[in-house]
Amino acid sequence: MKSVVILISGRGSNMRSLVEAALPGRIAAVVANRPDAQGLEYARGRGIATEVVDHKAFATRDAFDAALGAAIDRHSAQLVALAGFMRVLGAAFVRRYEGRLLNIHPSLLPAFPGLHTHERALAAGVKIHGATVHFVTPELDHGPIVVQAAVPVLAGDDAETLAARVLRQEHVIYPRAVRWFLEGRLAIENGVVRVAGGGAQLEFAAA
Ligand code: GRF
Image (cartoon, rainbow, N blue to C red; front, side):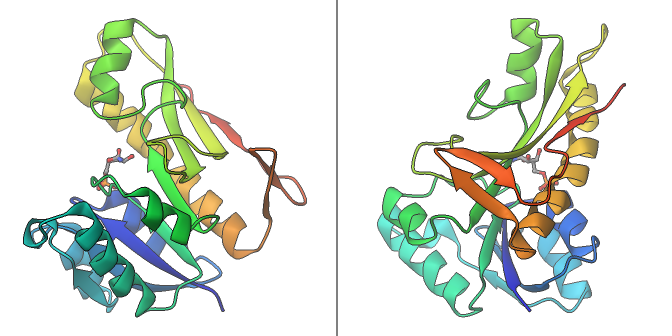
């Protein structure tokens, strides 16, 4: 059975959606870069191994990345799933896990990479917003798109209401993407992800 290491920085609701999805694989460990990441408590409560690699304890990104890689490798997982993991990872780390490193980002990439996506979507006046699960490449919030969820931006939305609407869909599409990976159904052809046997790579949620 394949196994997954999940990386978190905070609340961990996406981690929780993966744990509760009854995926065809084992959650080998949850690793956080902050000792106070709330999600750790939930993982411990579920009997999942946890590790903290505190980025503040390392002088350089490379040293942090090396310690993070060592923590991941202790659990010999086939897949590393970033779930609200808020540290930028260096190119060497990303290459080491290339093709088995997934991320969820709260926008319809390639729009709004980086932080504060909901505020920026509102400021831009877009009418559709959403979330993306993608393979991680060295360029931040780029990489082959596995699945996207689109939600409407409604009159009267603020960053909180919009974030909540997007988050509900994150919890739908991330388990779906991880399931496909664990089933060995994802292939990347010229930078585009195909799902063997088909599968909905777009979710559209009305308000
Ligand atoms: C999510 O919106 C995720 O897409 C983004 O940060 C948030 C983390 O939420 N990268 P949680 O920790 O999974 O609850």
